[in-house]
Structure formats: C-alpha cells, structure tokens
Amino acid sequence: MSRILRGDEKAGVERLCLRGELHLAACEYGEALAFFLEAWELLPEPREEYQGTARVIRGLTRVMRARGDLAEGIGLLLANRACFTPAPAGARQGSVRRGG
Image (cartoon, rainbow, N blue to C red; front, side, top):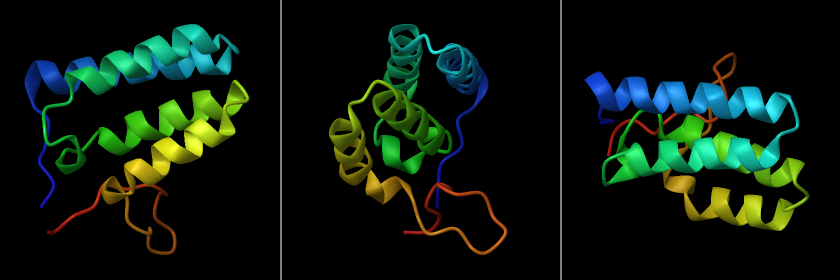
C-alpha cells in the first residue's frame, strides 16, 4: 500500500514540483532541476512507497530529456521503476504502485 504524504511534507513536495514544472515550461532547465531535486529530498524513505514520488521522478526525467540528457533520464526511470506500475486504460501514466 502506498503511503500518503501529509501536512508540510505534502505541501512542500507539491509546491516544489509546481515550481519545477513552471520553470520547465519556460525552458529554464537548471531552475526546474533544482526544484525537482529539492522535492526529492523532502520525500521520506523509502521514497518509492509514497504518493508524490512518481510526480517528482517524472519531472526529473522530463528535465533530463529537455536538457538533452536522455540517457540519464532513462537511467533515472529505470532505477526507480518500482515506483511505477502500468496504468489501466484511461488512467494517468506513472501512477504510484499500490500494494506490496
């Protein structure tokens, strides 16, 4: 079962991811990367068990791809694939794994 972030941790991760996504959309890759990495650091261990992890990893991967670091982005996804499961038809991609 995935764990739910609460309170300040949840708000912090959401705020940092939103800022990272805004910088990514503006092609400000260094700034976007910094915000996603900060969000990653806020996730408690074991990170793969928390909702919110998939959003951070997707953001980091998108930044790597946009910067031309596709191999690094793929490596990041593969290293963290336990956080993801195939999404059912009609569901959002990259959902956090449920169950255990």
